[in-house]
Length: 99
Image (cartoon, rainbow, N blue to C red; front, side, top):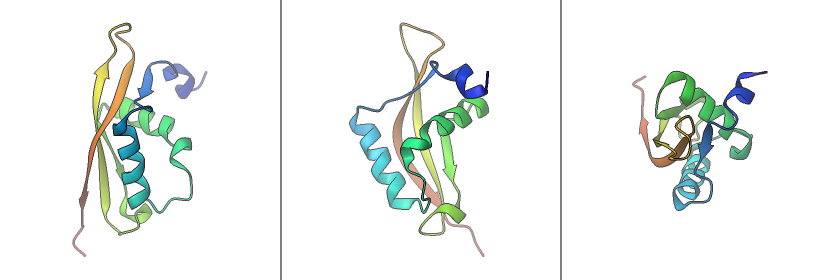
């Protein structure tokens, strides 16, 4: 069993919400990656869960504007299962590194 299978039902993205659509728009606005977001969301949630952080970083090497971007989420425990966490997108912020 790999780690993604272990977390399979415990990590949920708020896919059918306006927040998720905003996340998609923001991600595609800044990301220079060729991989569609659909194929990255499980890995993004797993990375946030393992690091116990409510954000992930799109590094400047993978950003269209050459800045680090932080995508920030609220993490909610679902009532019917204390183990299940739902990630609800809030906003993004960017940091430009000095050369």
